[in-house]
Amino acid sequence: MSLNHVRPWRNIYRRKSRQIMVGSVPVGGDAPIAVQTMTNTDSSDVAATLAQVQAAADVGADIVRISTPDQSSTQALKEICRESPVPIVADIHFHYKRAIEAAEAGAACLRINPGNIGDEARVKEVIKAAKDHGCSIRIGVNAGSLEKHLLDKYAEPCPEAMVESGLDHIKILQDNDFHEFKISVKASDVFLAAAAYQGIAEATDAPIHLGITEAGGLVSGTIKSAIGLGNLLWMGIGDTIRVSLSADPVEEVKVGFEILKSLGLRHRGINIISCPSCARQGFNVIETVAELEKRLEHVKTPMSLSIIGCVVNGPGEALMTDVGFTGGGAGSGMVYLAGKQSHKLSNDEMIDHIVEQVETRAAAIEAEKAAADQAAE
Image (cartoon, rainbow, N blue to C red; front, top):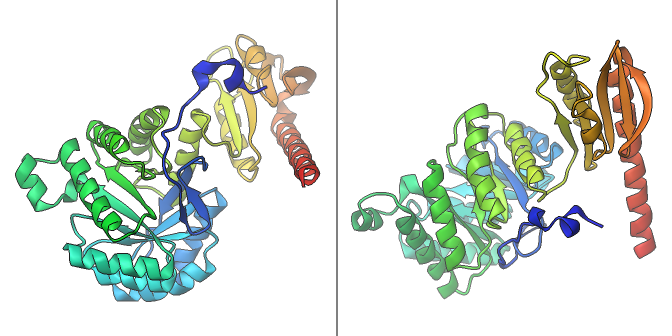
């Protein structure tokens, strides 16, 4: 029996949206919320860009976006798309011809900015290229680049202007019998972005790409994104996300998964429950958790691990985790397995032993899953 069944206050009821395909990845409907990032290499450098795509895929990225500002980058895109382990979205701004070239190069999706792409005739050419090459399209509205007539109408970027921009371009796509699209209405201001996303969610059934654009550095951007995206996801809004950080794209993916994991919307890898540490700790909690995060990064199986410095909350937390360790003083602590007290362990042996226990449990879970899948066939 799932926790959500016995504890209905944990449930998130996702907005019903149409499902589209971004390459092999379904977006919308009942598909898992996809996690994206964006490369920051020179897009014409195939080797460097592919290395960054692979690094992002290794930590769980479902989709990777690549900026294609010039012809040399769209030429390189053909090899990148062919070798990439995940679908590639081509990021198009001022030149619609780059979108056409990207579609021809094998991009799974074209991201176009309504405020920059040009007039309707150019959008129609992009639509034709997407149809011809099986691409989806993301309409990427941004508060910082709204169309002039909307800024004249509303005097400043506001939720109403962003929603109107998005709906105008949805109409163009639909009038041209194109329906494989998703939409985003991003802003760097959390309140503006949240209001715009709520408005667009009510106005269309298109899949929604969530993001707080230009959120900032690793710490400040993570907090801003967690607040903005977390609240929208909690309301059931969002089918794919990108956390925009001035940091390594790998960190964007990690933060994205942590946001989803905290809401029970995606489960990948180890969820470490650890205390902030205090004078009661029986071992160095902070150093231990940092080392375990590194040592367990390769584990993709969803699991929970509690690392608690003392017996105040440790036993209670361990009852709800796959593996747990609670400090007990005198240089040793208690190991918990599957929520049950198992055995005492020296602090000196703790890290290696916990890694071993987690890997063993992960292997058992994967074996059980494989057996169940085989039985279902």
